[in-house]
Length: 183
Image (cartoon, rainbow, N blue to C red; front, side, top):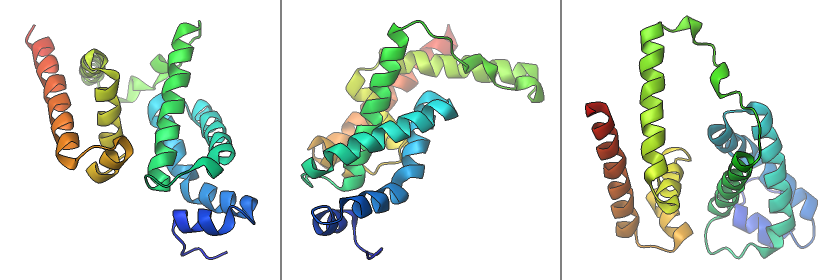
């Protein structure tokens, strides 16, 4: 199997005749990126590993349904983001204990750590006031490092619409954070 093939070419050429090889090549190309996406959303390496495996199983089962309306990577990242978001929402409904407070802050100055935590809390609160779509756009752009073109393709929007939505969402978060810090 040629490594120089694009994802889409590989799917067209090898999925019908050698699906295991096709999936293995795509898995090897993207497993680290999907894991990082999951880790950024869960802040838990074991959970991120589990989610990554679940996502690739889901992708493998749906690979023949990939219609190439967007790039494979955009399609994959969309599945990964939605899967993680759904699992996080589900976990919030069920009683669980988190490891969020278990970071080793003794190496950081106490005042600096407190300021950092307060800032994170304000940003989290501001993000929660955004609509689900606004949060998704910001996360795709700034956590997943997706280009505006990829986001536009994913949501079937014009570039100017994506830019404007990102700008408005950023301004809303900045405005809400500024209000919190002033009070």
